[in-house]
Length: 268
Image: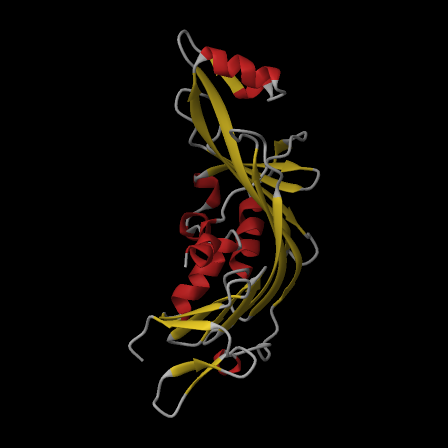
C-alpha cells in the first residue's frame, strides 16, 4: 500500500535562473485560466513527471522521471502512472501495482479521486486556483512564460519559500510545463557546511552563522505536459476490465489478472 500512497506525495520542482521583469496584471488572469483548464473534466493528459532535490545525504541522487496517462471524467477515471494503474467509478477505486501483482479496492468518490490527481498535476492548490494569484505570489515574466514567487520568505532569509514556473502556450493558453520549487532550511555545523561546499554544493545555498550554518534545500517536481485533450470519450479501461464479482458476490480479478492478489477494503 505504501507504493500506492507514494503517488500522492509527489509535489515539488526545480527553479531555473533566467532574466526576469515585472509582467502586467493580465498575467494573473492568463495563469488562472490555464490552471482552471486542468481542473475541469473531461480531460486526457499525457505528462512526464520528474522529481529530485539539490541536497541529499549521503550523495546527490539523480532525478527520476515517470510517464503518466490520465483520463478524468465526471463519473469515472483511469490513470496509468509508471507501473501503477488506478481505475475509478462513482463509488469505487481500484489501485493496481503490476510489479507486485497486487490490487487494492477502496470506497471513494470520483470527486475525491479527481482532486487527488489535480494535486498530482500541480493544480490541486485550492488557494492558487480559488484566490487571486497575485495576492499570494509576485508574478514575473521570463523568456519561457511566467514565474510566481511566494510572498512568504524562509524564516530569516529573503528567499521565497515557493517558486512556480509555468510555460504557457500563448495561442491556446494551455500549460506545456509546470515547475514548483519548495525550499526549506537544513541546519549543519560549520565543519559539515564547509565539507559540503568543498564537495561542489553551491556556495550561495549555504548561509554561515556565528555557531551554525544553514543549507537552503530545494526539492522539486517538474511536469512536462505532452498533450492536454478536453474532448469527451471512452476510457481505455474500466473497473470491469480488471475485476468482477463471482457467484458468491465476492470481487475477484478477471481473466488475465488471476495471479494478482486483490485486497478488498470495502464492504461491498
